[in-house]
Length: 501
Image (cartoon, rainbow, N blue to C red):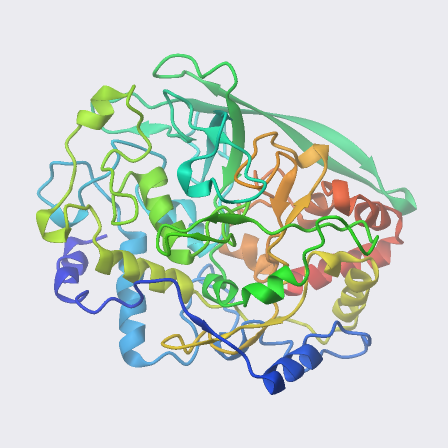
């Protein structure tokens, strides 16, 4: 990113876009009644539902036929807020460099890192993918690591059901496969795939690739004997601000941890420490719902993935542990004019504003017969038990783009047991080694238009939407089996519906 775009930032961030978690205003009884009526699941499938073509409400944008389809700002944004979006985009795309550097506004990279910019992981603001070939750095994919612990950290001690883990004593919570000059990378990711055939109805066969992961060429000695590894592909950025604006009560209303209704679905909420609020909050972001707000998720990614310090994660060495003395002693880009951080509060708020306002594209072909049939199959197969179609966001002062919108994310934002096939056997917070948050589906039909290598599920093992469905297990096993058994025209219609989202 040219320095001329960055040098102006200190003069423009005096009034940050957002500095604290958004305050969701309570609803009136009349509003609650209206919301209950409009969020009832569809019962007829001969035509689209009202407003279904605008999944992001009034902030929905046209679906571009380019790789920029997921990179547009919320519709109807005021000009001064568009400027904040542009500045946040510049920071999101900026290539950070190692310290010391003459480009003072861009130094602070690492010392160990996975990527040099946010955009390198979230390709086109969409999803990442596994390495294209052996020996190539993951960039948009990495391995999380932790070990069992006796007790949770103090910030999580009051969270019921928290599963205590600790960072690897040498490698921390995340393995970085790149390092600045003079520092060894922590590892090289190795992935071996086994093709697994799956027989479908009508004599068809699908093939799934079962991955096996290893951390080779470890730069700082062996991992802990109890180290638990979890692969993670960068998730898409679509509609994050709208997900943050869903009232907590509406999410909790769908939780059923003991499966009291006997439908086999037992979604559980994730609660995590909030660094901004100083108390536990509902987790919404990340593959296991490990972050409560867009701002905290943004700051955590800057720290762990790029090694950039901020007011929320102030350590200049990112994820380096006390055992990595050279990493901790390396030069940093901390700027006294920015509170000693490598990105200050105002710039962090601009990146957060950008992430909150990446718009949801309009649906395509939602009135076509095959898409409507696929929607019916989706509903009748029971997919909406987890992939909940509709919510109405809260009223939020200062965030008109997210305020009181009927949205269609197709997620309940809850944790579900997805079976042994998708298990990473690494707990995170309240999530067990078999649980994952239901990922939103909006924008998924544009994933491989935005990035031809885009892959699905938490580790990118699924090369297609059908493969992603066929990996479902645990609570979703009956639904996966129904997809296998259904006639091919219905299965094709289901995929057509998903591609229209």
